[in-house]
Image (cartoon, rainbow, N blue to C red; front, side, top):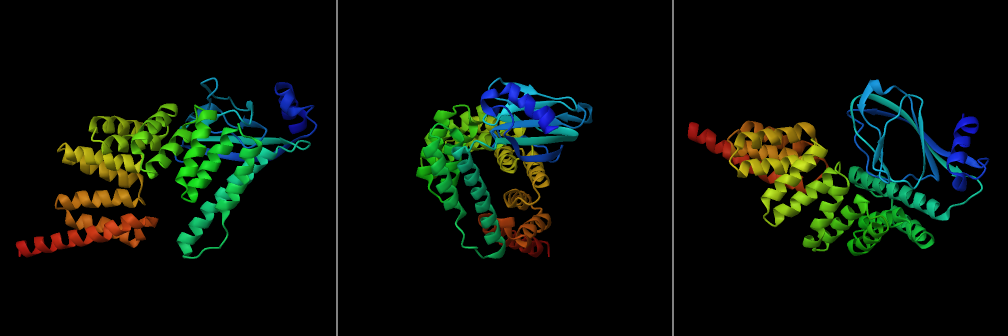
Length: 366
């Protein structure tokens, strides 16, 4: 099917990229299974290959939602079974969330055997090394050991080369910014994200990344509009809306905080930090029932979020429900904060506070 159907189509649609089609090769291909639980929206992104294709394997009646949104034409493309979309790899797009059923797709990424794209290959190597950095960090956290391999530096070397040979490719700057964030070089990362947003002014990730760096550099006032812009560019980006809400809260604008939190929860109803902060606003307004309900929802949606669990346990303790409060704190302590050292320390401290509350309750009742 590749040589008789797909490659001829690519050659006809994109002759400058595909040439005569004889040197096209599948770099990688995947069978994707999406469900309502796993089929969340992707970030707006570009593909690693020169050309890409997507094949729909089942009928649209089997699921709700889904489809691919293309930024350049602002259009959502949905396909019947057996239909294919073709695109150049650099076309920015986003997979929309599935809300019911199961969807099966094949995604393929095409390169040319007779053309070496040095910039693209360097970006691929850099992104692969970033993945190695995440794996290294996870291994170290789980085992208390390090392999001694510095994948972040490998990523930076490859991505700096990509920027050198492809100075106008936004994804090179974007990934280099991410790599610099990993080594706590906020100033260097901020420069990269700013360059990426200049090259690709509709890329929410560039604005969000720059906002993160500016906050780390103590320039919070400059960061806030960047989070707002990222959320405006991608209405499904709950993290960007949450950071806009946090920025509004820090300057005392609680009305704006509420609006941004509602936007974040519309994008992701299970967003733990947004649920916790929404609960705080309920509590400050005196709506204690909704405060408790919102904290319960945060834990239900994110059972291993120490932030959500601590917020719920604190709320329960403040309402005198000390046994349930202690049980929730115990989950955090038993799970060692699920990897969050700051929240683990908070749980240890508050567990002691609520334990003393329980002792006082017992003494007064006795």
